[in-house]
Length: 219
Image (cartoon, rainbow, N blue to C red; front, side, top):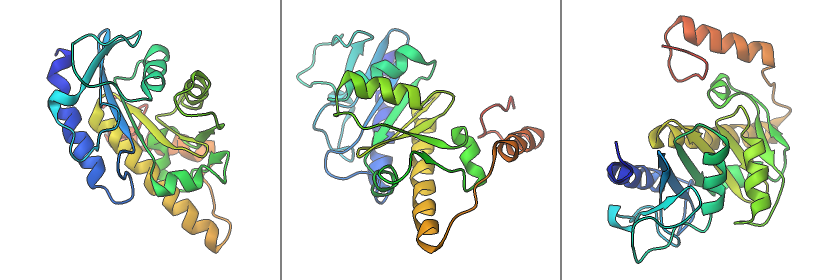
């Protein structure tokens, strides 16, 4: 499948995220898909609920626009490219949801307070603050994503990755839900968190039951 073949699915994912309450607003958020040596991204300044296939931008791994277009790639291009250079993922989704921005200002790691955190690799790291679009931010987010499928960004938002754009968006939505659960929990008391042994048991149980969403399962 060539990079152009992902245009429809990337737009469908963008529209889906825009329809999810609290995940995006105005021109917040950006998505991308990698195929070989090229990356397809949402354009800068676009509304995810209205982006169309012809507005998407194709670049190479150096960020050079590969197919002529009047549109420019998202301003967070460097963030997406850094992830593709340092991981084997094929899709990236980034948003500024209310819950993720809020949680990212009060924790250094989001505890695994629900078993579905195993889908993200366990506790979710918060990348330290760096100005948006900077190389420093890209590197900090890359480190936060090590052995994880999602991360928070201090005073910024959330980011998630996957083998395809649908999975990346699922991880992003799950992270938003986990942030909301955490924020509600701490307002009432000290939430109990799952430890590494319990998370490992969850993944093993999912594998035995052929429950595919958990990383580390082969079924």
